[in-house]
Amino acid sequence: MSRRISRKRLLAASLAVVVLAGAVLLLADRTVSRAGTGHIFTEATNLPKADLALVLGTSPRFKGKLNPESSLDPVDNGRLRAASRPSG
Image 1 (cartoon, rainbow, N blue to C red):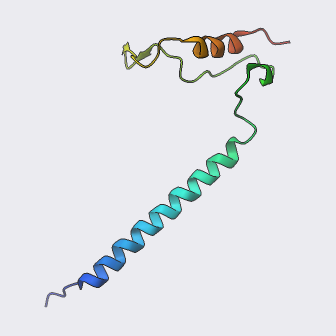
Image 2 (tube, one colour):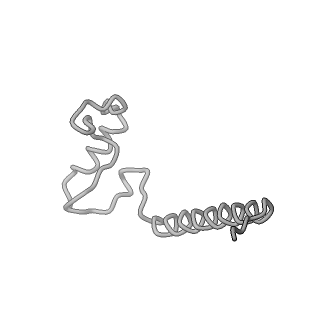
């Protein structure tokens, strides 16, 4: 005997999956936002002194090819200067 799932049940199950996935994404977003609080700096003068820095978004190459979105503009140059300033 084959048992068919009614359209209503299928729709309800699909809606439940979408709502659950949305809740998981929202929870993940909130968790990452809370974890990053106090660790994102928009001014180089606010950076803590450190011997090592990870500078994101400044690579002129991506997967071995020139990255058309990276031209080391003044913002990127500022990031690199801030990261390379001597600590102490």
